[in-house]
Image (cartoon, rainbow, N blue to C red):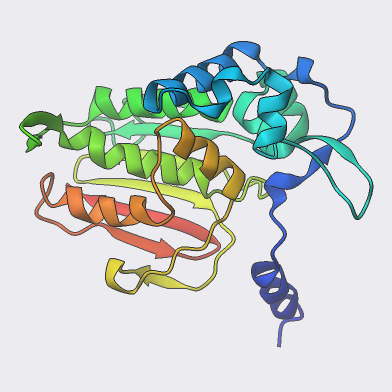
Length: 259
């Protein structure tokens, strides 16, 4: 029997979130003020008189546990989540040299690729770049929602992209992938799995992987309640394809969208 199994089981079951790792020598100058302001404005646009509107940058970071104190070790400072969300690129590279999302379009040139974007930046702009990549290479369909014509592609891939950014295990060096092929779109990202196998919406119990990052995405309108993104993928994808999406839990989380 492998000696790795008990350790892996313990790691999966413990309530320690690696996004909370504290960098005591990182200061607010390691973060981009424009990104913090952008997040603040997005939250206010979504909810007028949002509490962030009147908070300065440091107070905002403290209010959402992006700057915190570890009462076990006594360390105080910015967390890994803060660096990932708002950090300058060179700061993120220093903290996580392997951090990236590899976006690949492989429709015409199946041996290599038609287009590729090596995304090594903060999560705010990673989301934008991945959505732009999807919009550039994937066909669109539309559905009426409250008498408004809505892009089904954007509905589906908003959830796919937000989930791969919110629920990734960032301390694992496995490179995340977003691959568009002629008949399938695949995403892969490192994961702290709670079980193995295919997930189904009727038997799905969501467990937060990065609750602080997820909260920021929720506040700025890029995610809803925990678990809703998974159900929305199934709900909206029926308008995009006659195939069912396949989501597989494991140490590498995989999503397969057949076109």
